[in-house]
Length: 395
Image 1 (cartoon, rainbow, N blue to C red):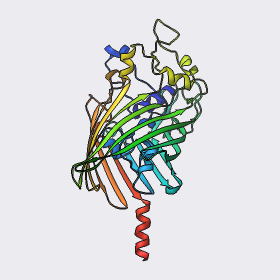
Image 2: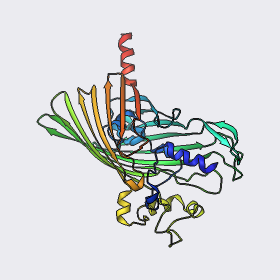
Image 3: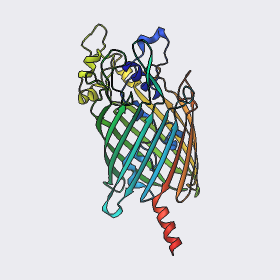
Image 4: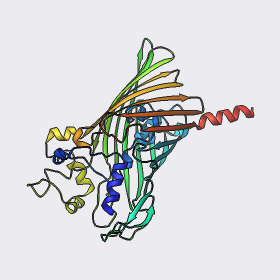
């Protein structure tokens, strides 16, 4: 039962292995615990191909790169995001994400925070004979806090700490199939990020070149049985962007980003068994987090070519009119043998002085892609704008 639940969680988070049996031996995706951490939670990023480390700052920068908050037009804001996940397969899996920030201004920095909750729907636990003994709702959640500040007129930096919790059998800890007893798993992780934003004068106005870099989810491993353990989805992300003013009211932004998972491969040239080049579950569990991060850059059996195939790419474009109306499109690419999550995305947004609303839609390009027809919704509030509105009414 433990293996069924873990596999189910991975499927829910779109770690898809859509290969035919004839190429199963060539498939080598990177499987992690708590893969829900890799799901883009907000509609703006989702509408641009699931990218955000180097885009212009917004209320959801906490997830992608909290250092961007240093360049927000507002001193503070909160946002709520909702994703009805994998609606083509099941009807009760959801991702909710809440985030907020406050910039201290003259003190030179600020704080951000977020809460992620992922519900995997209803799951029936069975005994060794297949009899249902209890219905549960597996879930995962994460809580984090960040600090950001400007280091220079064009450069900002952030650090974040995160608590992760995953309960695949909803507190029902007794073994259901004669195997090892399961229990909820938890760990701590940290992020570090940099953001560079330089204005460039053009005849049509001031443009902005942006560069973002982040190391996410650098933390301990997770175990559900106190025997075996798995890596969390640590990653290295880098991206560039350029915002171009077409005239006083019309703007066009282009972004490209790359994501490299800092997770070692089960099929690895460093595996003790050089015949199969595959770690056993226990050997994989014995790898430390730090060793796994560094090993992930050079452990693929296929050498440099396979390592390059582990990089996931995203590109997005955003058009805005007067910074109030937005239209977006994007493309996300992942190698066929690393998960095959390939799709195009579309999005739109409407931003006023105190409230913003964004939506996005995903169209899968791979056959039977569970990401197909996924929608995301974001509602944001500018706290500084609300404060100004209240003060104006009082006056």
